[in-house]
Structure formats: structure tokens, C-alpha cells
Image (cartoon, rainbow, N blue to C red):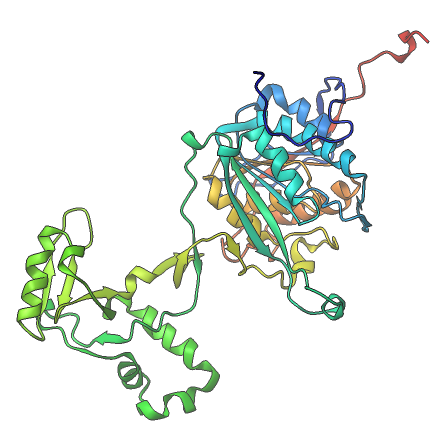
Length: 442
């Protein structure tokens, strides 16, 4: 019995282009570097390549196979529309061929522990996922994240049926056995279940006294508790969260816990807290946080809910596959370039890059667009390679990067990462064909 495999088929799938090897030639007139070194983290050997991305990827194979830690591509979604800077409507099977040919080389360039991201909407989502399963192996598909890229407003909101506000980021590991993505956290709202405040935290834990968080907050603000919400109005939640985050070790909630649910070393302290009222007991643990009990319940501290994100202590939760916190406000301003229906926010690429890389790793985007992936990678001190065929490689990406390198780009993630400028890039074009057309026999 012959072995078969599940695969996506389409007209022309077996037709593969014969790629002539080409080399990359630097145009030093268009390369750009900071006039002086800003920090020890400056990276100068980034690559901006102007030309067909299939030929450019082929040219990168020799030097970069197996070295790229993160690949993010945001190809045309094939929505059958024509936009200002690119055509987004080709025949379905043609689109699949274009994607297959490029992803095959991208797969070779990706490091064994690398991550591949493709940003797509629902027009080709199902088809490209089957295609990627075939190329990467279904077992290496990691996640499908939903990105909320717009709100329910504007002309499309009046059309019958559902309003489309999302696109998708499909995430694959080159080899899941070697893959170790970073743990990321995102800002979230205050957890009101943490409703108690330790008034004498600096004293021995056994004598800790708890009061309602609102009472402690009222004393801190010098306002009667019953007048808090009236006097603070819309700022109430913002102000109480600021208070909680100023001393999260003092803010707690209690949770009932059964003896069967705690380790043997904690059972004794749990029993003691049941037997002796209004006294806090502590179970010490090696290599883990100590556990505190009061009146048969565990004290859980708000410190467990906080993380430092972009330099600020915030209430946070682990990143999920629903990315609804990155709305594209003022996106048109980022980078100082206009790129309607094509630009993605730097905050989105920051998440992609921080999830999959560490400083110094290589990030590649072969659908450069307005340069957002490379711009974000640069500000995060990653090495980058980006390819763009359109003339906006020169009209959009180069000016954007000159501002970034000079430290005069205040937009995107610049403030959150304290970007000061520095580094540089080399500008490349594809060398002319080496074939001698005069030797071709008719």
C-alpha cells in the first residue's frame, strides 16, 4: 500500500521557477550610519535590500542559512483590491505559488530554534495554514494569534452582517524540540479581588492587621471613605491602582485552601492557622515563595500580579493568543511615512520580536513595506534584514531609518525603550543577471 500525505493542491503547484543565483551589491551612497557610536549595543551591519524578494532570499542562502532567529512576513492578503503602494489581488493559485516559493527559502534561512510569523487575514488563512503545515510540519505549528487591528466604526460598520476587525498571526517553530520562546506579559486592569491592605507590614508577620483597601486608600488621600468616588470621579480607578502598585506587597486577598492541596511542609501551618485565630502563620519553602495563612485561608499578595513593562510597574497577565491591546492609534504618524492599509504598529512587532529573540539575534522581513519590522528590531538592538521591491524602499524606508539612526524619531516604541539613536544599515541591490543573452540560441 503506497504512503500518502495530507497536502494542499492547486493548479500550477508543480511549476517552480528556475532561480538564477544572484549576488547582492552594496550601494554605499544609500547606506547610512550614525556619525558616532551611541552605545556599545550599536549594530551597523543591518541589510536593506531593494529588489525582488525571491531573488534576494536566494542570494542570502549561502551566508544566512540556519542563522535567522525570527522571520515575520506581512504579505499582501490577496483581498482582490488595489492599494496605493501595492496590488493585493492576484489569482488564487498564483498567490499560493508566490508564497510557497518564498517560504521554502525562508524555512532554510530560519535557525533550528527560530520562529516564523506570517500575518494574514481570513481571505487566505485556511489555505496558507495547510501550506505551512506541509512545509514546517503540523507538529511545529505553535499558535494562531488573533490581532484586533480596528474597532467597530466607520463606513464598514453600517454594512449588513458582521464587522471585520481582526487579522491573524500564524506562528511556527522551525523545530519545537529546540524551541524556547520568551515569556511575555501584558498590562491589564486592576484585580479588585485583592481587597485587603496590611496596615503594619513592617512588623512581624504573625501580628499583621488587615483592613479594606478602600479604607487604606481613603486615609492615604485624606478623604472620607464614603466620599472617595464622588471626589475623584473618573480618576478613582486610576488613583486606586496607582496606590496599589506603590506597595503591592501590602495588598492581599484571601483564598480558602484544603490540606490536600498544599505540600506536606505547609500542612502544619495551615492547621495552626485554623486553630489560632487572627494570627498569621508562615510556611517556608526552598526555591519558592513562602506561603502565609490567616484563619485557615491563604494570603495571596498583589506582587504576584505585577510586572515591570517598558520601565513601569503595572498590573499584568501572561500574554495569550488574543492580542486586543494594540489598537493602531496614530499609526499614520509612525516613522513619519504614510502607508495606507499596509503599515502595522511598532508595538505589534515589538511583541513578535521580544517573544522570539534576544538582543543581537537576526530578524528578517522579506515584505518590507514601510520598514516597521526593521525599525522595531533596530530600536530593540536586534540585527535585521529587510527586502522591498517597491519604490517605497527608497521613498519611505530610507528616510524612516535616517531619523531612527539620528535619534530624531519620537514615534512608535521609541519612548518605551528610551531610543536615543545609533547604529546603521547597508543598502543593497541585486546584481545584474550573469546570463549572456547574446549566447542564447533561438
